[in-house]
Amino acid sequence: MVKNQRRQPLLDPAVADLLSGMEKRQAEAQLPRRQREKIAKERAKIQARRQQRVTYDLPPVVRQTIKSLAEKESVPASQVVTLALLRFLKAYQEGIINLGEIKESSRSPRYDWNLIFPDDMMPKK
Image 1 (cartoon, one colour):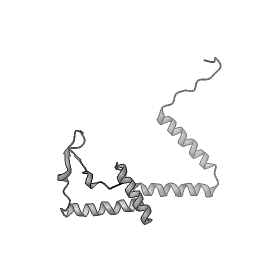
Image 2: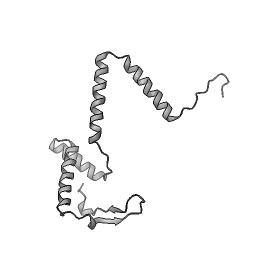
Image 3: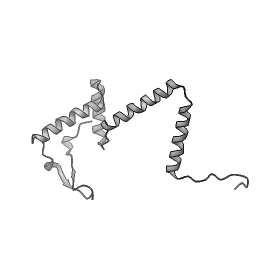
Image 4: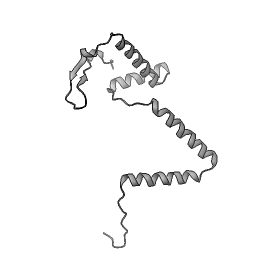
């Protein structure tokens, strides 16, 4: 180790994030008013969409099929998924779909059951 080299203190990740955020705000404060307004507007737009956003784990073949369908029909993939979920929920409420038929006991402490999807239910590649 070089004797004259200064050591960088180790920062807690939370403190590092806080300092980074402060630096970002300070840099934004130096921007022209129009740019600051544009940034604030974009932040508000992102914040407003947060209530509509959700993340689910999907098999890759399902995700790719949704993406392909959305591209083919020139519509957003999220709207394709919304339509599919609305139809599923309606069918479930009407008793057309019975999840008991595809339930399997789970070893997870968080869930009692897992749904097992038969191959014939999965989209073809």
